[in-house]
Length: 132
Image 1 (spheres, rainbow, N blue to C red):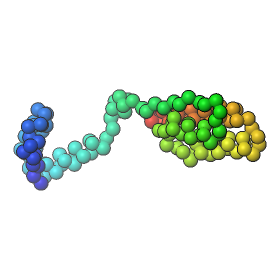
Image 2: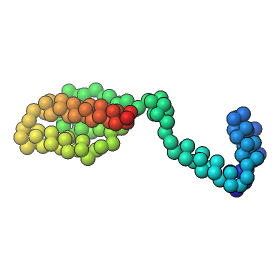
Image 3: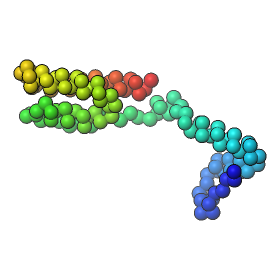
Image 4: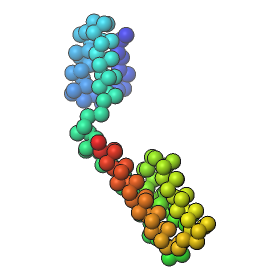
């Protein structure tokens, strides 16, 4: 395998890239393959300090309207907490609250308050999982 850098790209290489390329050219074919395999391996690793340095997405808070249905609240909270991945478990809890409102007549303000609490709890759990 021969590494070739297009002529137009050669001028834009950094000093480190030029040094790496020079070292790469001095290697045998087998050594080049080994180096490439190792580079690919390193590229798949996520160092802990990189994880800590990368800020997690924050919720996109939207003010709660005075008149809001439970379904509209769920849509608003889904948009607010767009980063949540465990939607199946979240759906179980939100559908239970919606059912309590629709079928059992539970007060809409209580249900929406609890929906906001559920989404916030899922967000805190997501943050903890993502940082660990």
